[in-house]
Amino acid sequence: MRHPNEPPLTRSAGPGDLGRRIGLRRNRLGLSRQEVARRGGLDPGFVEYLETHPVPVGVDTLTRLAHALDTTVDTLLGGGRSGPSGRAPADARVRLEELSPATCWSMLCPGGVGRVVLSAPRGLVALPVNYRVLDATIVFRTTSDGTLAKAGGSEVAFEVDRLDEDFATGWSVLVNGLVRVVRDEEAERWLGRHADPAPWPGGDRETWMRILPTGISGRTVRREEAQVHDSGAPA
Image 1 (tube, rainbow, N blue to C red):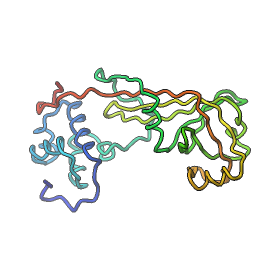
Image 2 (spheres, one colour):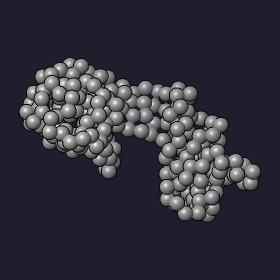
Image 3 (tube, rainbow, N blue to C red):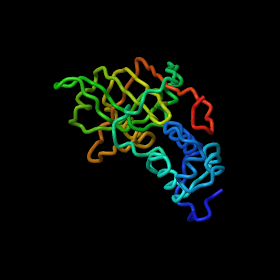
Image 4 (tube, rainbow, N blue to C red):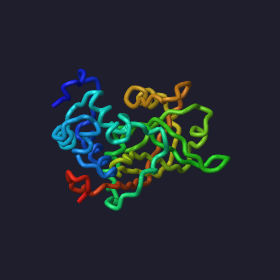
């Protein structure tokens, strides 16, 4: 179901996310599907289909929708995250839940970017690192003379979170533990082969660090889904 004047598909949305963002934005503006269709030069049935079905959408349709909803294409696709999180209006339909240790580890296991919180001469600092999970420990690389390497043998905290303001959802996991410099050459070679989180800043970051957890906890915030009505008002 593409607009007859739409060019070939050149960009697609994640499964289901685009429709949810369209419906959420439409409700916030108090618009009906007919009004969105009229403002964007689209068929009302097509707008309904987009809100209820995961489907790839071309640039022309995305641009029309963004104009109709007073937003941008990047925002509809979940982009535009250059500013700090937490600026969206509060949503009374969210629920905060504790995560089990097993769920916390499942959140961390894909790896990515987290923050190591430690005590430095200038006070507490939080430093981002590219990390991996190995045998229920956190591993990362740093410079041999940097703040992180100098913290070897001390207690640290490690935090990772993922947020989606549009849907008022997200999670945060906190690991407490002892960080150590990996000094065994064989272990360093093994880590290089099996757990190489290439640091984004680049440069000489060949010192391996490992956080041995003493505790792990996490929380998730979920939005209780409300039925979306064609009138534009949530249930």
